[in-house]
Image (tube, rainbow, N blue to C red; front, top):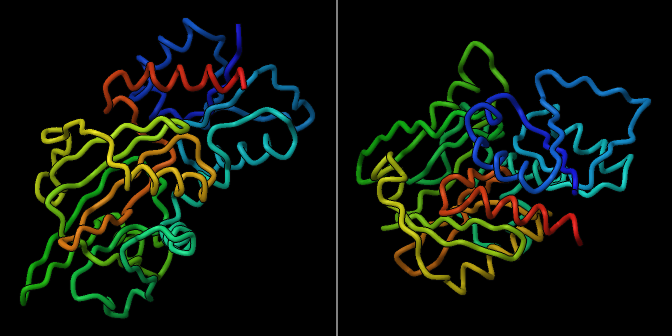
Length: 272
């Protein structure tokens, strides 16, 4: 029986992976490395596992992922590069745009400067915490201005992290499209945008494959060195798809048979 190492934080372990772990333990031995309590002995790097899977994006998990990549030959999903670039909105916007992926226009500005776009969304620069998007919406003079409470708190709060704001040009779209990728296997969904209906699962529905999105998703995952991801798209009135967000630790509970799909993918990876 194969053995899989799960690198995870307490929040995900207690709230997001119960069904996944139940299925995984029926098909493989599982070793859990918990971010909040695991102390690594640098003198003993003989991990007795066939594959590592990272479910989370904390600093310690990324550091451990990088160490495993540098010091062992054990495959790991996802790479530290893929996780880090995915959570850094400004960095992944730059890299994806350079790679030919259509992303909304974006800017990283000092917090005391005005947005370069008349219609915009302010998002947190490093998307590392587990709390969700909390938008403040302002409509004035025919323009829409949205700011995520997390982004403002990180600049103006008592625990200031930086003095810059990440602006993303607002794309008006009837639907938000979400694609889950497990290697080359993709699953397509659409829902009303969160700004229209905050309960994203209420309107989510599975849809047929969209060839144009398939090509974009596979290329974006390759550029960012991701084997598992979820990607969000908006479609402009001109029919252009824009990649607005990418998540290296998708909640696979949101798709039909998601935990089983994730387990099957990991088991298959141990055979390759």
